[in-house]
Image (tube, rainbow, N blue to C red; front, top):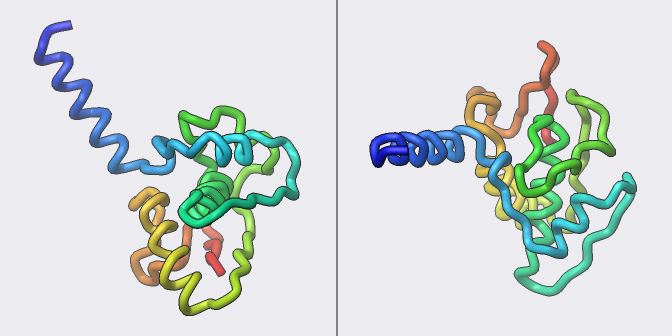
Length: 133
């Protein structure tokens, strides 16, 4: 490969990562085990800053978009294809959901899949919309 081809490949990879951030999500080893566990009901425990919120949000994002991370192959086998309905429970809606979870969802969901009329709605693969509640 010439230097021009290398630069093109790097530019293409950067553009793909910006357009489809969930595909390039790279979890920590403990969270990777969580993603690859085949059980539908699971728990993720950890201390502060151990990627619990980010990991669970990435799991929901992968399942509702149908896009699997290149670092967690096989993580979507336990889910049926989209559209899905998820409910994310948290202790304090204002502090946790709005302050922590929504920004992570907006960071991980491909921008082309976000509904601009309402930032919290996510499109499904059918004309019916899926609401992130």
